Image (cartoon, rainbow, N blue to C red; front, side, top):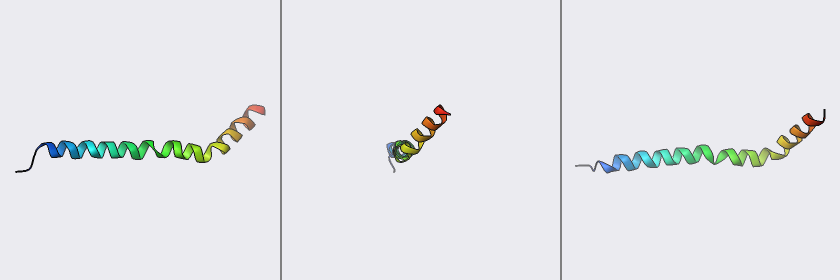
Length: 47
């Protein structure tokens, strides 16, 4: 008979993995596009 706790572990692992997949790319994209973001902000502020 399968253990009932395995379903809970599987669900928790899936939620943790999905959270990591959502959170990690956000700062990575920001760091890659940081130069363009700051240039746009400073150009908009001086016009």
